[in-house]
Length: 177
Image (tube, rainbow, N blue to C red; front, side):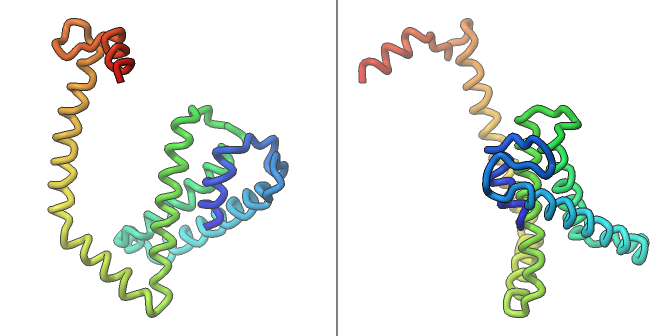
């Protein structure tokens, strides 16, 4: 969970000058070390499990969620410090958001270790499995309406469209209020 705290504060607000240097007094260099070392150790454990379990490792999707989370956390910390891939800031923030969601999913999965919480983890997983069809149809409906709204909103930018709204007319509407 150190990753979530690091991403929420440091990735957005800090431009690091080096892996062990920090612009703030919030131990971001220590957090980077913990994330890098912890991610590396967990990646090694996942590879040991892959070797031990063989092809059965691929049967559990949680293994892939955890492995992708650990790899993404490791890459993000290095990218934040060294900018070695040259991706844009927007793509970087998107990766950070994905990594944060994966980290929360892994955190939720680890609740299975607590006997009083294990029931709820299993319960929610079973409920989500049961409503997969509904979720799919719901997403299709959202995309259907969203696509129509997107097409109409993009047509406002075209002067030959009946939906076109000139800036001066719009400004007059705003000023009338």
